[in-house]
Length: 186
Ligand SMILES: [Mg+2]
Image 1 (cartoon, rainbow, N blue to C red):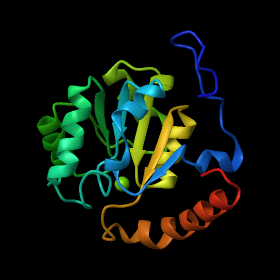
Image 2 (tube, rainbow, N blue to C red):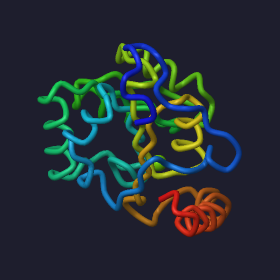
Image 3 (spheres, rainbow, N blue to C red):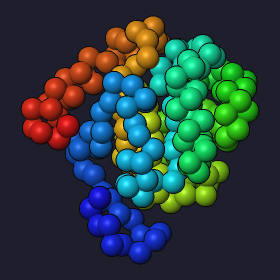
């Protein structure tokens, strides 16, 4: 935390520039590695969740029992959740949001900031109180960093995804992750 003594509502994270806009605050293999206590220590109250390859395999609907238990625990500990998906299959994200009892921001057009703002409005949180968890650097992480929120990148649940993602997004993503590791950012 850059400035833990800042009054509530004040931005606590310094704005990112250049390549730092692509670097997540944290990189995990699975959402299950993210402990609620650790989020609370960061001052997080609301969590924006990507859907495809973060909570469910690409274009699927079933949340695994361990991920469901993790989500249920976050809710029972008082965290606000919101689904933010670029997917055009909005009925599927609606059903998942209903199951989780949380808002769903459709056609988010990440990395644009508007969807992140709508998600924070739905949860009643400020950027300093919000985290995003997602599997893609150029949508979830870039959009989160542009919005001044805490960004957690997760390894994709499954290798099946949009051809565009696999061919266009993943290679530079891997290069940048390697660079960030070498520079000690991750
Ligand atoms: Mg995704």
